[in-house]
Image (tube, rainbow, N blue to C red; front, top):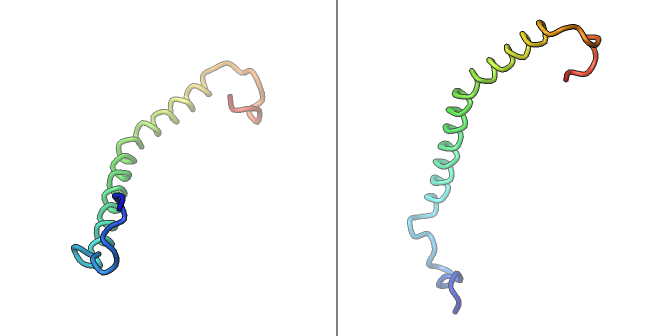
Length: 71
């Protein structure tokens, strides 16, 4: 028999039926934690870029109406 087919029914749940669910929850929590940490690191840079963009818009010479295109 080719690899990957297992040994038939009745021999699953090597660690018990609920362990896979717990492992999935742990992986999801780790991913959410990493995304939160990434957000905390990136947020000051985004705020700084927005402030620089606002200052740049205020000091550059008047070329078009303020309701025109943003760029």
